[in-house]
Length: 91
Image 1 (cartoon, rainbow, N blue to C red):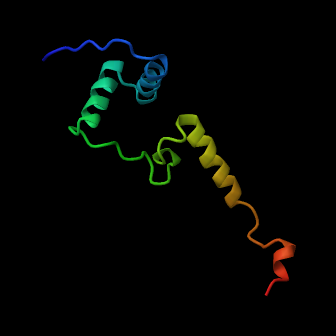
Image 2: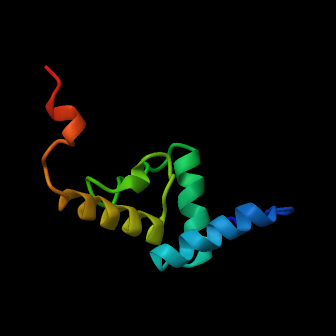
Image 3: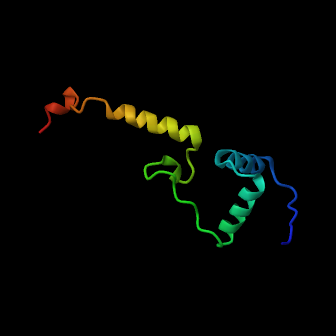
């Protein structure tokens, strides 16, 4: 298999690749190969981890952020289901 050398990787991209490797438990090389395959149409994008996982929305939340958001949503579900008093008098 041929090898490629990629130069001038900016710090933000390098950090994102390292984060992906850490989150998935993959070697950095495997993350880069996977991303190249996705970008060239040789691999399908990964489905979201859970059907309700917020990370599927353009990567807005990741890892612990997604977990914290889901915890907050669960806390909101335990609130009473009654309408506030100003809503009760409406027709």
